[in-house]
Amino acid sequence: MKNDRGLTLFEIIVALLVVGILSAVIVSRISSTSVYDLKSQTEIIKSHIRYAQARAMNSTMTWGIRFDTTTSYFLYNDGDFNNKMMLPGETSDTVTLPGNITTNIPSGKTRIYSFDSWGRPCTNKAATKLQDKNNGYRQLKIQFSDLPDEKIRITDNTGFIQ
Image 1: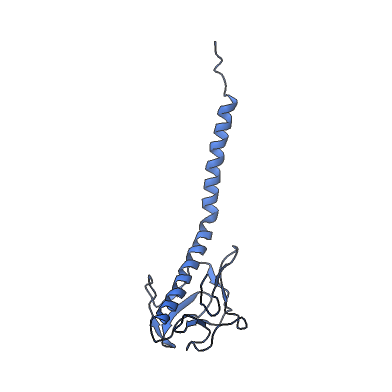
Image 2 (image 1 turned 60 degrees about the vertical axis):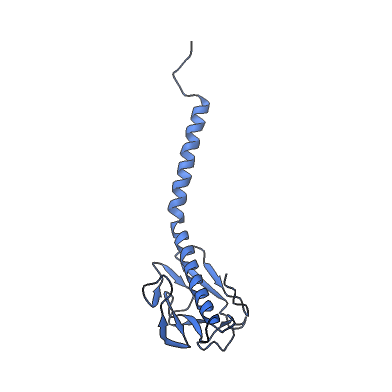
């Protein structure tokens, strides 16, 4: 005869394992949503900067991105900030960052990333002053509340964006 009045040790371990796996999945999805939002927005900004670089390399005009505040930026060409252009995938000529996402640009300041015909990063709207280690433009930090910063780095001379 067999005693059927309880659970075996194996059944208890399997039940605890299933509960543990489900808990881990639920907690990770809840806590990582804002991390994914920050990473996605960082990749979008990188693609916009790369777009400006590609346009500059394929034309005789200067192309660049100007960050006006900690929460918005726009694409311009021909060294003229009034000549705003639409970025791919956007519905307005000025891109506003969503929610609590901001940049490390001080309030009231602007930052310009322009490119010459070789794709080299410059720090003025006419793309005549090459970016270098002394002007501090190499790195743009994208921030979201209390999460670690995401960084966009633009390499001097080559214009490599990482």
